Amino acid sequence: MADDKGVQSVERALDIIETVASAQEGKSLTEIAAITGLHKSTVYRLIMTLLNRNYLDKMEDGNYKLGEKLIENVSYYINDLELQTEARPYVAEISTHLGMAAFLGVLDGNKVVYLEKMNVASARLYFQIGTKVSAYCSAIGKCLLSNYSNEQLNDVMADCSFIKFTPNTISDMGNLRNEIAKVRRQGWAISDEEYEMGHRCIGAPIYDYRGEIIAAVSASGDKHVLTDDRIQEVAEYMVKAAGGISEKMGYLG
Image (cartoon, rainbow, N blue to C red):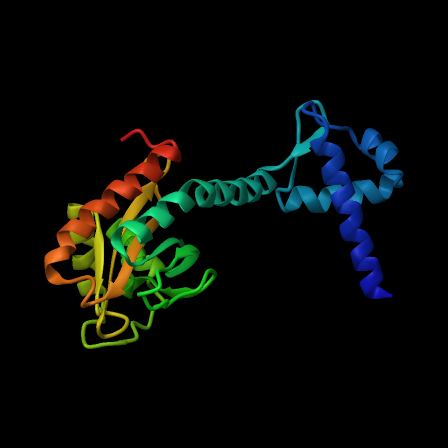
């Protein structure tokens, strides 16, 4: 019975949100009650909860409109969809052109989440879409961390245990700060056998219209495919590909 009441409350709250969203000028409590068929006292109670959580805002005229929190959450979702849509053909082209696995990833705390991947028959596939890996040993992760100041970087990595996956893995904040400074200077990052021996990955950052790094793309392959003499070539190609996606996301820099 308690669960049924909980579901009913959620449904009523969603009815209120949908009612408010239907009018640019907002809706009054009386209008919301009339449209939803709910008692005014019920509408008032739910509105107070939605106001406290910033899912609704009260306007100067007393009407209610969608709140910043709701708009922010929806915007994040829409931005991710736009990012994936714009980046998908670039990810496919990276894989085809370089003959390596290609990925698109974003940051979640101090982890990288993979949103897109494209593989080739000759490449081992290390990560699936939705996989989370530590940013400090990932080329995509290093690109994303380069968006932070050193102070912000310390905060983001505060609870990181720096697991040493290979002898090449970065193992402390000092070395990570040095590595991120290098990424900022050159505009791309490499994970050189830092997650798995014999495996390399090169990534480049994607910028949005504000000039903020919102994602990164990478090309990944075994060391005999991504050889020493190909590193600069692949890095330049990745920077160009990431730049193309950045333009699609409104970046003018």
